[in-house]
Length: 370
Image 1 (cartoon, helix red, strand yellow):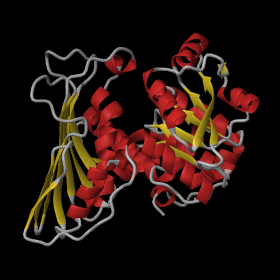
Image 2 (cartoon, one colour):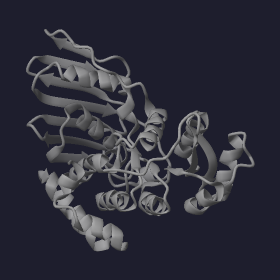
Image 3 (cartoon, helix red, strand yellow):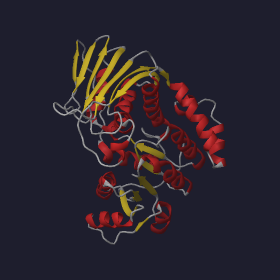
Image 4 (cartoon, one colour):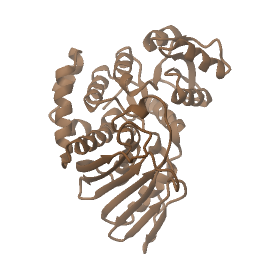
């Protein structure tokens, strides 16, 4: 995937509009403001009062605001947008931006459905603009260290994540049918792909809701993924598990032919193997600030970043496959989920150029994983 290059960096900051003034939007506003390689030029939100409050809280009460991201970008000379809207708005906001000549850095997930994610991958192709998803935990230096240690173990048999937290959320998370799988587990699923260097083949998942849960939907789940190459990735988690909580990254164990690695999600991973670890590069970035920096570097150099829409779509495919398995009680092939999403994307696409890009794919997996 190639994309348009923009001359930008610390000496020529990328002019950015942030779309979304909620709690996560405010984190992005602070990050964009603090980064030397970006300049915040506007805030877009359907709630203009919220946008104005966010601007005032940044100490910039005169910052332009608007309800239409593309119009606000045109009026302020913005060169890119950061899309921090709710998942249902990711597809329309990002599509409009890409075809207005604005590269997009979006919050995870790519979109509310895998079909919409495939549409956005095709929209990026048709527009020639970069769409990168901020899968922020990818940039954790400890995750890079863990990946390096896995490289010392030979063949990997099993990678596991345990995630147990007890947050109380207002809004859409409290009402989702599968809040843990749909809103949170994608972080771990994406990290597993990164650690194993492999994509999913099939999954069996059970989701359930403990009797004391304060969520409407199933807030706990266990899933086992078969990964390309034969490794198994097992995820076990709950979002209503008070006491002895894990870190937000979860706790991890990798078991390979030469030993094991443990990571508590907060500290440095520990290698248990009779091998001499090689020096391996670590991520110089972290969290959303790292994602923003990589986005700007990619626009400046033309490089394809981790989190580019095609590469990231397989993480969302893991989510939809797990949900499908939980609903049906059956083992689900990821290629079946991809094919169903592709058929829906072609059926529902109303832009001829995006439909033509989709129709040019010889296979969905081949388009996402060249």
